[in-house]
Image (cartoon, rainbow, N blue to C red; front, side, top):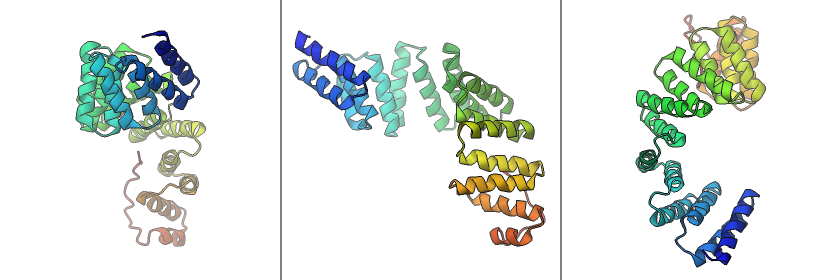
Length: 280
């Protein structure tokens, strides 16, 4: 690259770091006009377009980067992410596997191959990739979160709890991990722990609809029916819509002896009220 090309490339990098992506894109495009096949510039453009949600343009530039440098690792990985975004999952997995052929410890590729396996409900294969990712990077909270989700789907709740606890330890504001940890406690009928975990979710995210609803189920099981109604109302007031909401509100009204209100929501309450089922 001559000095002018380097200047455009460098200016683009500086503008991108300052969050001025449209101007950065213009600088990188100017650089490519002088050196059309420079892989790092194509990569930078692809990443910028991907962040701007122009995924087709991102894919085009990552492919051009790979034409210049077939082993450009970041472009292979970026293509995998872009193909996932377009739901081209087989092509995405192919890209991630090409990454792993070159760098078997690439935690992003390991995690994403695991996610693609989980999408096919192959939770055991998914778990092996999440475990590999967490082994390579013990501080990678997302790998533990995804491992917990896989183990939850397998019904291996103790292992799910361990994984979610690790995710929360590493990233205390990981609301999804905290919520799923609460669901695990609920499933084990450890309602005191479930309540504390749902409350932690609501401290971090006061409008978390599922946490309000599922906290209501905890109150129901602990026979705190007025508290259950309060949680259900909090969910409804924040826009929660689910067939089970009216059902469980009706059960709480019935338990409080407010049968008219119960019947307004559920006109045929049976003597067997069934089980309260949390919503994920």
